[in-house]
Length: 225
Figure (tube, rainbow, N blue to C red):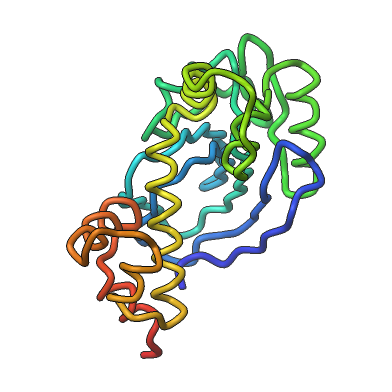
């Protein structure tokens, strides 16, 4: 294992999880597509950087080196920074400029770097200063609750908060569901049926695009060495 980490649920209604870890070796693992925004703090070789990581539209490779201490703040669906247009942050990691050794610049103001213990407080300050907002429509729709508003309005709010359409997100979630089924021992053909794919090639294309692995690779990864 190249990363040792601990994760906790946040008390903040804007945060999904907070994870703290360190890299114990160089690695370039495959990361899946992601609808969440993240704020990631990286400390290495005496330098500290805070990155804003937007949603990932497809699977890809992420690289890191040994000896880094990392804090991941995973924001809940629909949570975003209104002064940062989401379309500019899809599929990229943006390093926020440093203000001093222990602070960074965000929207013209200097902010202290967060840590694992005060991450919730850090997020609360961002919310109070209108630097972080949450569109409740996004999470409500993802939870299956219909909204009394035109579909065009819902589409606009999804694009504003996530940069993604509902259709794209549904495809991502279906791929994640199929991955879970395969990891639980469900056969490939049964996964095609249970996850609602047309056929096995359709399942394979979807998993390769959103998860980064084929069904057969997912099954092999779950088997003990």
